[in-house]
Image (cartoon, rainbow, N blue to C red; front, top):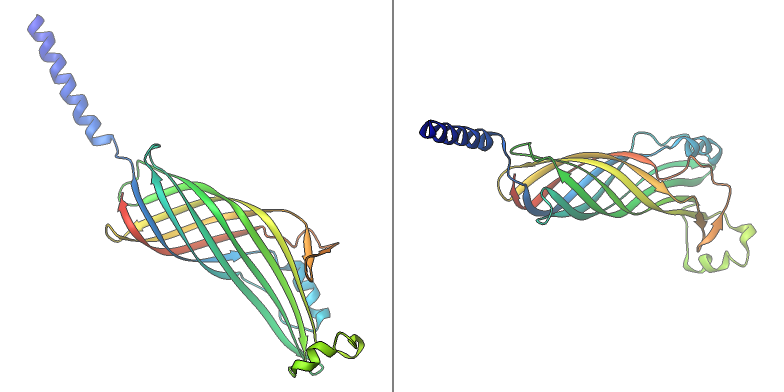
Length: 242
């Protein structure tokens, strides 16, 4: 009887070990850095409403293409957790000629953030990671009007005779804190190269605007902000053990 119990114990142990080896997973690890491009879709509605009055018949539509870079490293003290950083920037503009003047409006977004992600351990061969970013960003809106004829002396004389100048420019900025939930899928081509596909949503926190040498700008519509959905892709160089 005793031998039978011992035999059953060893058989059960071997069976459990086999099952465990089939269903257990190894923690992801590695580190990488690379170039990224993103498509960001902000709310252009309020700016588009102003363009016709500004003398521009075109409108902002679609999104903004940005370029940048990012990197990460797995924290070996916590399984499947990785930390890193990223940065990006891009602009989009609309241009028109009105009454002999060139008019242009530029819309720009840029930023940088610390990233923290958890890679799903049960997914094999690729890395699917959920996480977030926290950092800072800047929304810039620039307005230009010019007759496309400039001279060095005129740029100084215009300040003494502003009523005679038709060359006008304005630069408005909104610096903000960003918090973004993200999901990324990294597909290794081999142990040293990988491509990424990801998306997220940027929440911008700060309604303070400045203009012309950091002077306060008031009454900016609340819909003009850095909140935006984005998708990204990139190519990474590093070491990948998925």
